[in-house]
Length: 248
Image (cartoon, rainbow, N blue to C red; front, top):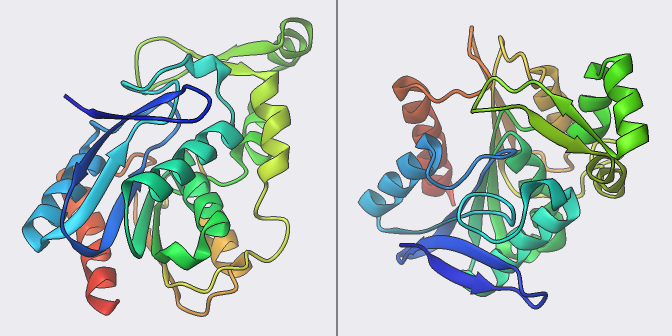
């Protein structure tokens, strides 16, 4: 059973924390994903073997946390991540973000730069509510969005389609990070598949260009898909995180 963090607004955040040495590692999941996925568990095993502290959690509306997914926004989920960092960890942390979690990872680091020792993004998707979703909507979906406040879009990753709300897209504009320099100076590692059909690999190049840090490495995986969740992909992620921890 997960432990529970209750935020000031009454939201309950489910999490699993493994005690260990510093710097700790925090995993931030993707859009409508949860902390029981392959990446979260592979990193937990890595940290246990190394004796590093580790935290995985569910944003509100995800997994075992409270709330409805359709009510969530980027600001709400970033707030969940900052609360988890503040209240569930001590000392410097390496943030690892998958897909949308890569955006949440950057927003968390910008909110608490003094707490962040490094970042690792896999298929990171900052600004996707502005740069990806609107361009993929059909004329019918755009009409539905304006008339009903949401649009139904296909989803190939789990049962049933996504319900994308106008509030999600509108609120996301308050948190865009790729328009200007990203004022972070910690080491950053980015992994992206060249066959990613959801988040273009060029997004990781743009992140690298925008970051103020001079210690940024981008690894492109030939023929890699968006999920990068096969055993060799998980091994690559763990190697990347391990090497960054060794450097710190």
